[in-house]
Image (cartoon, rainbow over all chains, first blue to last red; front, side):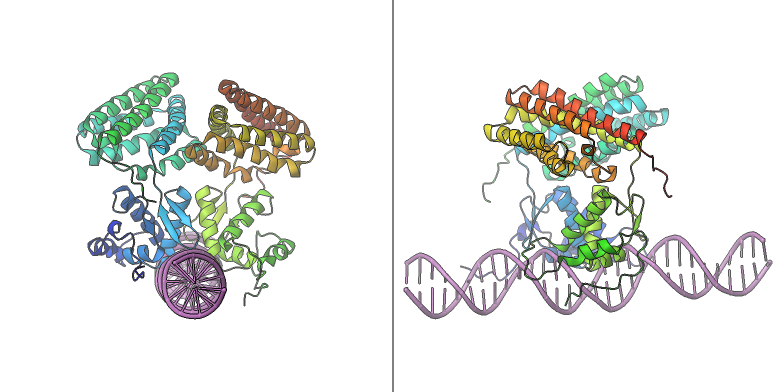
Length: 251
Length: 251
DNA sequence: GGCCGACAAATTGTATACAGTGAATACAAT
DNA sequence: ATTGTATTCACTGTATACAATTTGTCGGCC
């Protein structure tokens, strides 16, 4: 009935003028940015999804994003295509893109695969790690120990920890497979590490994994890594169950 | 306008003129193609790599591909970006892209991960398969049996077989992870199914997998699938060892 | 009142122009 | 001859204009 005068159905999820100004401050010509606008767009969109500024299920169009980020459609298009191939966005041929949304079943599927891959990475790492890698892991552990109640610091540390193990496994296909799964983590919302008890338990498991790696105990590393993934899923599930978040039924 | 013969200059490591003509016949105005040029470009490049018309290690530029396929740089660029994210091409920021090449170690890594994922898919399928899926698998088996010496028919059947199992596993993340690994298969060169004995053994294993699935014997399905992957790697390795090793053709 | 076709709006798909980057090359100075 | 510097060149990164396509809406017709 109401004639569509504007193209802003997803208005509430789009950052407005304030954010726009903040972002497009990137335009300094002399700065050695070295990142293409497409990469910037990709990261911005991903971040906005992770932080909930763009809601899951929202409808995105190239021009909206382009004007939001203050660039032309070309790099935005490239970024959206990339996010589509990652699975974060769902392409609709002439109608824009939808931000994918995951339900509890999807989450279970994700963790089932992680439970397959991450223990394998830990085991491979245990067989290949050299002194340098073990030292790097220990350094992360120490930093984690000091940041257990500081999620903002803990989250990148956690990522580094898993990256080192993955790199140490020296299997590009394992890395690719895990990356394909991790790509959808921004859709899960807040990190588990915001939860203090979970962070402590996760840190203890990290320590156990490094201990096993240092002893070249691949079996133990694999087992602890599997437990680590399981624990992560449990925390997710209890957090969802405990909070008031309910699945919205609207299509 | 869309003239089909454009300036075909500076074709260095490109397919020859025959291929060029064959491809650019795509511009029929009435055809309900429904595929974007970017998708066409993506498929053409992938196919050319798989068939060896574009050598691994070759240097590709957007303009070369664009003039080869008779389209503008925009869809070509999109396709190349996609192939880069798949890992088939290696991007060099302002200098084009290289066709990735895999050595024996890479191949071992790939099969190590497949040995992790495909058995899991078979097991999940064994737990979830309904009559329809089992019938579909049996139909494929029958067709395979008739085409054991016809690789051109066998190859798509093989893909369908694995696709059905994967879909039946009903885990989008497992699918994504396997897809990430499979994406680099075009770099491996000729299919194992060109080898008669291998094709027969693979068919027997397929049959054993379906039998296990039908009996809901997840453990057995998993074991046979693992053996299937191992056998595939062995064939690859012996073929490489036996045939002319053309590793260092060019730097 | 409901169905059907044409028109209009919105959005993507594609082409192309132009600017920026980094390597190769030519040239001058030592 | 060698090295340092300027120029050129091929290529990508980005913006923008235009074509194609889908969908929703409005009017007419049964």
